[in-house]
Length: 375
Image 1 (tube, one colour):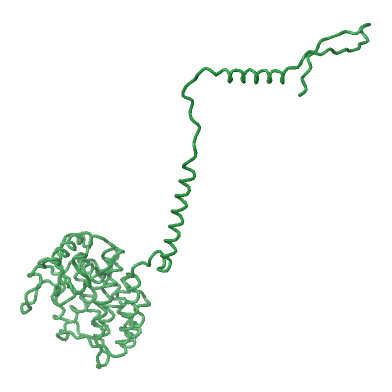
Image 2 (spheres, helix red, strand yellow; image 1 turned 180 degrees about the vertical axis):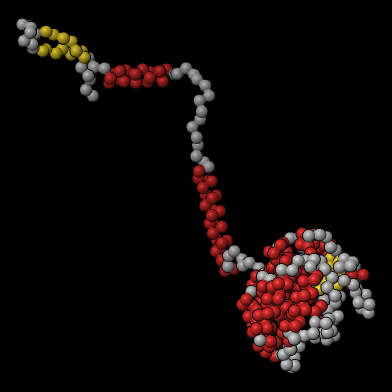
């Protein structure tokens, strides 16, 4: 993945001249609609098999356009909906490649000369890969998951070609810039880069790796429009590795990694691939498959209970409201009179005579009193 300012004169016609068609055209338009939110401004996207000018993805600044190789998609483009965050998780490598190129569009605001010109140009371009991801993840932390997914296939895979040559500073420096620097960028975790850290230390020494680490950390802090500081740090990088900054690197650049470092990189790829696969794994079903029959049984029992309750309690009658009056029948009037008389006799008794003696009177006095009726 890289920023291309102009196609090489002898290169074949860029794939963007043949616009995507059919479902790829629809997918490219849907990806284009999402670019302003990712990069901060619109950039057309061309996603189709074979796009990218031989790279998984690229940003052609002078056109401008972002190309993404459709072979990375791994699914039918007709069923893709990039507007849905959940749908993007079905093709995290493709989406991560798009985010990486959007990061270049947003944060690579200077023109770094082609890496074939000099060693410092190659170093600056390698260090720029982690710097733009550091800036992108700082603006949009949710993009980190997809940048990790793209790193698994698009960056680390570049180092899997084993070679019989002894370890070289150039190879160790490339591994440090493209992989270890992503740890400080917040994209990779220390446990994922530990095997490569040990391999690079064995190749160039602990002291040199420490100086490289200080350099890439300074590079991450460089402003997007600061070319002068990029050049100075890239030249320092070359001197740490014992390379002439102004000498042209081997063309074409083929990174041959010694067997020990190749094993370390392969292990790092395995660790990161497992972590990314777990991160994008679909969620488990809410119930285990063997519980389906039990759920159906519980549902049937609950339905039967609800029906029985409606049948039993639905038949309960309520007292009718009074809607009018009528004169009582003869039998009802006689019953009411008998009830009235019984209640009167129960609450009021007959008069009783009580004789009381007193020392103030010579004779007894009779005073009528009302005695309570005894039931």
